[in-house]
Image 1 (cartoon, one colour):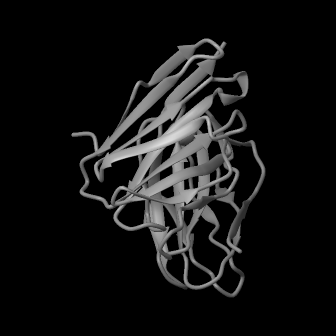
Image 2: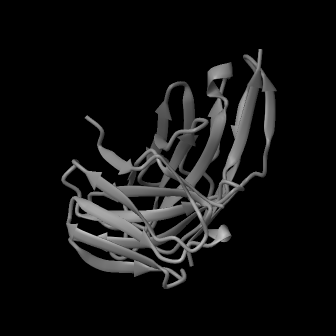
Length: 112
Length: 113
């Protein structure tokens, strides 16, 4: 049973399109996150939700919009995709915000 | 503020060599410290952790000790294997509401036989 699962694993799309990445955790955790990993492997927090409430919203373009329908799910929607959005996006969860996190397998987004 | 600094890579070793990857941190409060590992094409896996000063985390032959006096959490392994080739991330948890793990930039380890 996968603890944190995200889909799709790979996403190739054209500039200007809108796409979504879905994430689900079955650990019963209260907090979920989206991280972006760039081509140099650097990991940067983008968003975090605690019990469906947005608690971290780092400086990212407003083309990125997270949505948490319940505390087990956190989706990421991206409008008007740009070449610079190409990266690996990781979903993660933790029992409480700011504690040990469990990561999904990542979604490699390629914008062409 | 909180931050993590780890040694730049890549680190290239022969099988059975000794490994050290340095990690230092700055933090307010009482953080927990972690090492995560990312194998090629995969997500991040927790390798080991330490939640308070002088704690030693260990797993799969890797060890790291939480040193508050030197604000360090260096990763060590006595004898690396080819299968240890991966990217290693040092991370800090502020243990405060409304925060997230803060990662170092990652160190790529390549082990050859």
